[in-house]
Image (cartoon, rainbow, N blue to C red; front, side, top):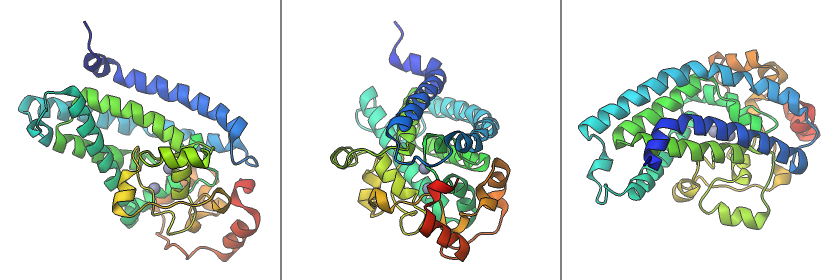
Length: 291
Ligand SMILES: [Zn+2]
Ligand SMILES: [Zn+2]
């Protein structure tokens, strides 16, 4: 009989891909009915973000191969701290500990992307989106894609995470990442309950607020516990949210895919140094109406 471990090891990638496509279509339609931003050109916006699907393919293929090799090696040599855990024979314990460790790894990686100037210039491509919706999930510079997967590879190597666990985590991640970026807000009560443990759209929207200190908060990937534990948790009401990054609100930086692809190689700009003209544009108009 085929076990869940065998199934995920064999078909994990396909499940992840089809779930992502299905969830993307469902989220897109929920946004059309219950979105919080209305006055932006949704299709035009999605076409700016869509090319990042193609540019991420080389990194995915290259690092995908590295994942297979590293996981084969750690399994063969029983390398990684997971092998020394009590109850390490229990699939459930192994999954939970691996999942929590990889989520902490994503939190650490995300802080590094914000704090190291050159890495921030890669991550800024994701943050520069002035209309947060489900297509923002796709908006990741191919350079960041490689950096992110390399970090995950490091955490997998240190822990000795099994392939099926990595696949199951990525399936859950595909769901939560789309959910977090949706142009939608949970009712306050539901947000308070779900947000105790998980990153909700309401919480991730604060991370996409254009100004500090909000950009540097709610770094969590699937779980919100790290932000609560390490003091990076913040909330902001919907009527105060402005999406984007204050240093890169101009059309010359964000109007098309080519401009976005070049961003990491431009000059680093300090928060608050932005053009006054763009500042008044944000304050008076609301950026979501001007895409
Ligand atoms: Zn970020
Ligand atoms: Zn985001």
